[in-house]
Length: 386
Image (cartoon, rainbow, N blue to C red; front, side, top):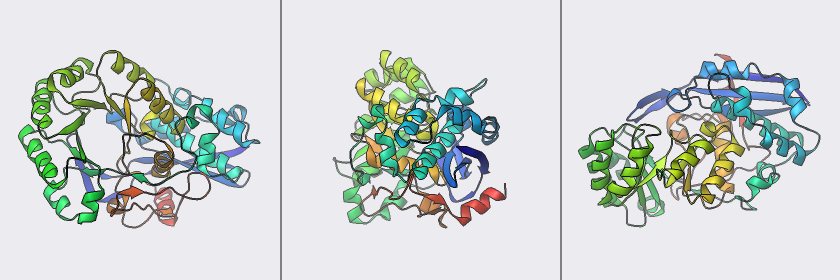
């Protein structure tokens, strides 16, 4: 039975900025949650982003502060592992935490912590927890395996500089390059051309606009980028501009991936009915947790829509670990993002530390109980200072 729930804001300077058309991020903006029961502690994390879900760190903390342990104890039977996981998967934490606005990042932080706690109470790995839920297990492999990850090029550096630092083995291994778009279409085309020249036809290239282009610009850009073999545009115009997204697909001739426009099943249903999407970017914090993310991916698959498993910039620990669990367990994902924590936070903040094989561009599954990591002293000291 849960004894207490601890909530911590985490805002840590990043060693280098991450820049896209709509935002320059120089520090994290996360909320950590620790749920304590029977001598065990489960850790979770959410990444509130005002431009994605209208949440801030403070609104997420306020929402989480209203959750009483005894309320969760009445919803989850912690004495049995399978029952507890199925109970957790059934709870609509996004709705539970929401008042006048939805709170998916807060919900994700709490759900991951509860998931981790249930595993630790029963000495189980996270993959076993996923397989407890029939609706999720249909998406999963029985054994977790290393997942190929994307190369993401943001606007803090010219792509020529980043590509020049890659060795031939890495270039051969990379199967997806994602570029952040510039406001200037000509400059964006130049950046894509640089990448296309270095990578072969087997490597997919996508451009993430973060909703920064208007309709006319996006359609003109799609026509130019199509000739360079761009596989899709991610969030090419303002969120939920379904008509323009459909026109980009039909007139511009380039596939469209939804990100900010798709935070759940309702968005997916509308987008598909209106012919506005080929793919979605599913991110655990944006979707409200591990199980809602898997439900969204499953629904997309049923509708013939592919799914990328994405990340939020600056995830400090439990959130990237939860994403690693899903990415190494789920089958048939279109692409997987893994973040660049080794660049942003040179001093590890978890045990074991964040690791991605940048030679082979794969992320290996984490071993151990629950989500596979715990915050280390460096991260906990940042928590206590807030």
